[in-house]
Structure formats: C-alpha cells, structure tokens
Image (tube, rainbow, N blue to C red; front, side, top):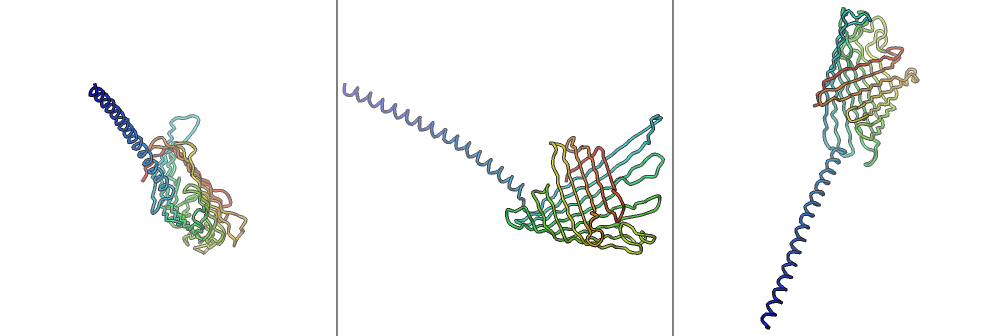
Length: 312
C-alpha cells in the first residue's frame, strides 16, 4: 500500500514537472519569436532613419541630370481654313552637381538647349538656343539655421548665330553675361532657396562687329563690354503638383545702381514636365526676359511638345 501511494505521488510530481517544463518551453519559444519580430522592426526602422538622414543630409557629391528631346509636327494639305506645314525639334540638358559637407553647401547647375523649326517654303530658324551655368556656395550661419553666408556666379550665352531681317546680330559668346557677388542665402531644401546679393557685379561681352554701327545688348557703340554694379535676387522653387507633374520655377532679378536702378531686369523660366512613363513626357517651357538695355519690352519664349527623357 505504501509503495502504491509513493508511486502515485511520484507520477503526479513528474506530470507537474512536465507541464512546467512545457510552459517554460512555450514561453521561451514565443519570447524568441517576439524578439525576432521586434529585432526586425527595429532594424527596419534604423535603416529607414539612416536612409532619410542620408537623403536629407548627404555628404559629398550628388549628381543628377536629364536629357530631353522634344518634337512637334503639323501638316496641312488642301486645308481650306489655312495653315502652314512645319516641323520642329528641341534638345535640352538639365544637370545638377552639388556638394555638401557639414555646414558647407555648393550647388551647381547647367542648363543647355537648342532647337530648330522648319516652316514650309521658309528658311529654317532657331526655336531655342541657350547655355547657362550657375554656381552657389554657402556656409551656414549656425548648425540648425536655414541661412547661409553665400557667394554666387552665373554665366549665360548661346550656341549659334542669331539673325534679324537677314542680318547677323549675335553668335556664340556674343553676347555673354557674367554675374557674381557675395550675399545671403535662405535655403529650405534643394527645391526651395532664395539668394540675396546686394553687391553684385555684372559684365556683358559682345563682339566688336555688332557694335560698329550702334549699341548691342546694352554695350555701347564701339565698345566690346559693359560693366554694371547692383543688387541681385535669385530664387528657385520646384514642386510636384501631383505624382507625375512637376513645376520648376527659376527667377533672376537685377537692379543696376549705376544706371536707372528702378528699371529691374527680370529673367523668369517655368518648366512643366508631365510624365507618361519613365522615358516619355509632355514638356512645357516658358521664359520671359525684361532688360531695357537690350530691348524696350518683354522678350518671351514658349515651347511645348512630347518629349523623350533620359536620366543620368
């Protein structure tokens, strides 16, 4: 009898130990699973935070460019309402190479474009011709500030000769515009910035052949250059209206202290890109210039067409 009771007690103790060990095993198993899940989530969050930090504050060089080809065609044959057959094509390059390191920021941009239009029974003409380079160097006033001490340099010219009423009026590097000076930069991001330079030098260079009989692009007769000193404001703002539609705004203002400072030079460009897919898009470009030394009124340029884009 005694042996029987001992055996039963031992079996109950053994069963309790099995249940206890099983509970411990289950607990450790679930703890391990939860730990793995938490570890994966933590790792993912760390990777996302590192990616955001790299995107917001990249160090070193960041380079990005887009090559665009736009084409337009209109054909009329026995069209009673009237119209002229024409074909046009434009190529463009928009390239950024920027450098960041701690409190230093150096933004560089190259914009180049060239286009031709052929209207039936007429001589082929330019529809676009520009070469621009801008460079902006900034040093933060404090670590967490959006303000920088800055210095900028802008250069602008054209590739090909220009004609007016069959007379050649310009060619490569004539005219050529240079602007440079110190200032203050407010930069919220790479897509939103304003530079104010109250002590800006501006130089305009023109070939002597275009100033023999009068002034050209503000350069006086018999001269090959013009120097100006004034204030410049350069602003850049790019945003997405929707997922596949982007607006790029570039505004340059300049006032010459030495000659009629109230007549502010204006150069505004709007680029709209409506992406169809990775390579195809509809592009619209509008530019207006006011420079009373070159022309007493607004100069305007407008291009729209279906484009082939290649990013590099």
